Image (spheres, rainbow, N blue to C red):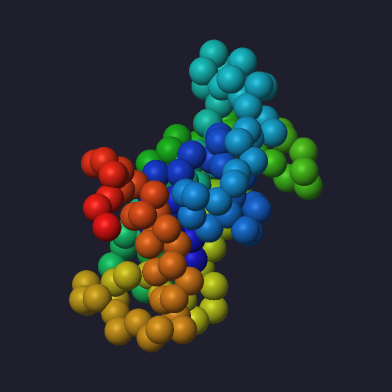
Length: 166
């Protein structure tokens, strides 16, 4: 699973989540979405929504949901279908080609799939909460990877106040 900061605050326009080696905010990133130019030109004027940005929102909600992972995914899927009108247009990348797809039912699977890519939950890993909202008992082998990434993020954010005394 990617670290929390990347899931909650990452931007799919500037981070290529499909690169599995990107696990924390410190990892080198492919900085530009391949569709950014076309998206920038047409999205606002033609009311086209980006499925990756919607997947990012969905990933944040799934990550913070206290229900089981699959229940959280289904909950967010249902919320999306209830929220968006039927005739909305979306940018979607299928078979490495960007295209505009009309209709929320035609893109929901793409959005959910990309939300899963953003979270990158691996076998044996767990999100921070159980169904009853209590913190899970996480064994070292489950949490080591994420703990190391979070430590790197914390260290990088601490700014020294001057020279260290020896």
